[in-house]
Image (cartoon, rainbow, N blue to C red):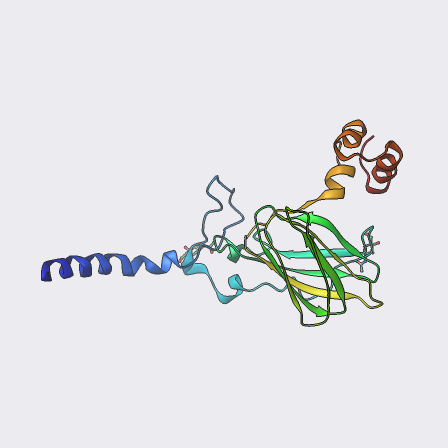
Length: 210
Ligand SMILES: *[C@@H]1O[C@H](CO)[C@@H](O)[C@H](O)[C@H]1NC(C)=O
Ligand SMILES: *[C@@H]1O[C@H](CO)[C@@H](O)[C@H](O)[C@H]1NC(C)=O
C-alpha cells in the first residue's frame, strides 16, 4: 500500500509542474491551422489582454438586406477561445429586421436579450415550432442543429448577446444556401416545391446565379 501511494505521489509530482500548460491553449492565429487546430501561443508571453476582447462593444451595422447583423467573438476574432468549446457574439436587429432561418450544425445557442424586443423561435425535427416574444433580460435557447430565427417586430433597435458551445460554430442560412448560391433554379424547384417565378424572385433578391 505505501508503495502504491509513493507511486501515485511520484506520478503527481511529474504531472503537476506541467499542469499549467494544459489549462488553456490560446491560439497563435499568425501560424497556419493544422488538422488538430492552431498551435498554442507560448504561455509565458500571455497577458490578461489575451483573454479579453472588446469587439462587441459597439452595435453592428444593420444597413443591409436583412436589417440585422451578428458580430462574432469566435475563435478567429478571439483566439483565447481555442479548445474551450465556447463562443460569444452580439446580435443587432433594426426595427423590421431579421436574422433569417438558419442552423448551427455544431452548437447549441443561448441568447440573452439586452435591449429592445425580439420574436425568436425554432422548429424541431418533428416540425413542432417553438416561438416566443422576448423582453429585455429574457434568455432563450436554440438546441443544436435546429432551424431558428430572430425578428425585431418592435420600433426600437434590438440588441442581444449570444453564446454557443463551439469556438467556431458554423452557421447555415437556409435562404442564402438556396438563393445566394449557384444551386441551379431547376434543382431548387425540384427539391423545395417552389415555383419557377418564386425561385427567380429570391435569386434576384439574394444574389444567386440563375
Ligand atoms: C515569447 O517569450 C519568449 C521568452 O519567454 C521570447 O523569447 C519570445 O520572443 C516571445 N515571443 C513572442 C512572439 O513575443
Ligand atoms: C453601414 O453599411 C452600409 C452598407 O455597406 C454603408 O454604406 C455605411 O457606410 C455603413 N455605416 C457605418 C456607420 O459604417
